[in-house]
Image (tube, rainbow, N blue to C red; front, side, top):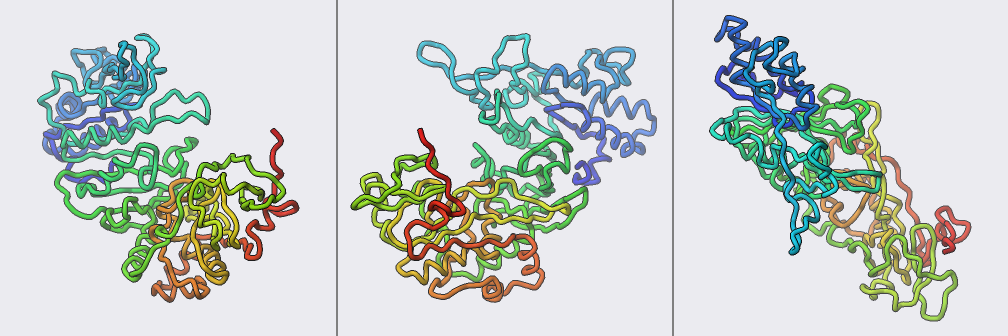
Length: 508
């Protein structure tokens, strides 16, 4: 990771380095090792060189008392930087690597009681457990570090691996708030020469509370290098970080496109220098996909599938767990497609888009594959979308499905379902898909074609002048996908008793 820094930094005797969230001290230790080599000509005497590096160049703060002890042992070879075992004799036991306690800032009610989440990091109130317990109010983002005594210091390089989330996660249903973006922003706000950090890659396309951060980063022309590691366990074996991790180099004096690399199994697979703003609000992590998207956007002048997709809960309040249907049709009833069965409801149950009921339509499951599957070589192998369902007029659906398109004819409906099942279309959805959820915005790169004809992958490859290599990559990346045609019935046979998807309604 440190290799992406310019070589010149290892020969700068006056640079000041900072790791503001030390966990083990590994970054500062490696920096010290490289500086000991790099400054050998400027300061030939080893003892003087080491003293200068440790006293004047390397600074940090730990995230807990324990990580402070571990980090000092790693860097100074002693938990007590003023003790006889320390390689440098500091006046203070913490040396330049203290733990600085900070406090959360919680909103207050009118009666003075605190409530809600910390305004600095979104930590829950439950983390305040007394002064003798860690509260995970990290000093770097709570205004406690750099300390008042350090306020005139200028840092040249900020490096490290910040905490990724904060919360009181007792089980898989609890949500922990991402916090790494706050460390990145705080580091950049100090305006050093370089910021080098490793964080989850989830911010590229999604992530709870990361929209503003993503917008800022994609627009920041000082972002010089990103190395993406999409395989979950590549960087941190045994630690499951959904979406993988990436490290980036932000350089104050850089103003231009970003060198984006994909690293798998320790090897760089591809590197392309590109404008990160080209992703229309997301960072396209696949360089080859970015090239295809660019071609499609340049060639297509009509509508995009995003514009014809309906919203979530297209017919109103009927969520995925809706159970207000009945099995037998009554006079005036509307057919309803649920997740694993069909049923009937009164038209009064539908809150909106009543006119959609009597139109031909294509549905797509709102949820599909979650983590993007990768093979042993780190290549994506995914279906991306669930099975498109082409439906005859007369039905509505629950939140389990989105209405991907409405049509006036059987032919267009059938052709559109087959179009959504092409590898080409699903390949164009993939760059914008960060989770299992599918909605209109995922289809922003998918062109809306003339649906009076059937489109095959070969037709689409030719239409957009894809190279043989691009075609082969799409074929390798996207798994085959079937379609579910129900052009003679508003409820597909798969959702009726005996069908492949059918599950009977649960008895309350």
